[in-house]
Length: 260
Image (cartoon, rainbow, N blue to C red; front, top):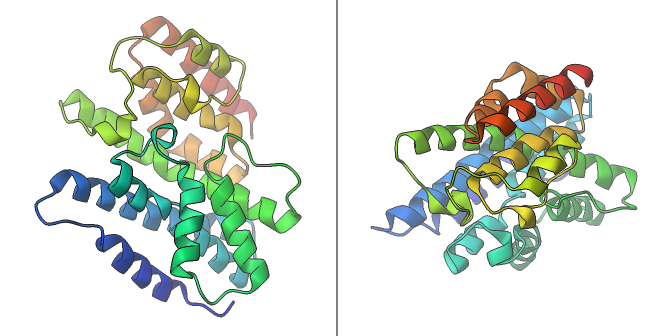
């Protein structure tokens, strides 16, 4: 690979900082949130790739995908004032367009470029598209796990901030802040199924959707991370429907205990 991750990080920071506007605290908060997220996902992807004993070339490729996986989020928020794909455009495909328009990253072989774009396309889909080749599938799985690892951290911190009255509407995706949980979302979780964002109505639904990510983890490294941190337990504890929360907690604990 004829590239350097540090140079790509410098470009990424310069690019994302170009979206900041003096005096626009709401926009700046969300741009900086996604920038920090992308940098942390880069680190998660690198550590995950190393845990799989991939060669240095592949580890760096995983890091590049982590860096650029959400590159579409910045134009999405600037142009649509939301992070909700259903109210704007799927951010994975928007990211592909952004990278193509920027001709960035520039120093990759055609094979590497295709892997990068395929992984970015797949990182936010409910399921990985079928019939990918072995390499594209591997890197799609890596970025999906690395992304989830950091989102658990972000949403746990956000739900705790909500308890103190701090809100960020962009992170709530326009969902209702009521003490309700959609029956279909609850049933999907108990059936160990991935929950679609289109099925959500309430913020509690979003919490359950995030908890259901444990059913879509691809690597033991990621499962160990979830077991060793308290993010999942904390998110579940903040579901404001007590009877269903208790059942979700038991289901999640049993699933993780049996997935070693």
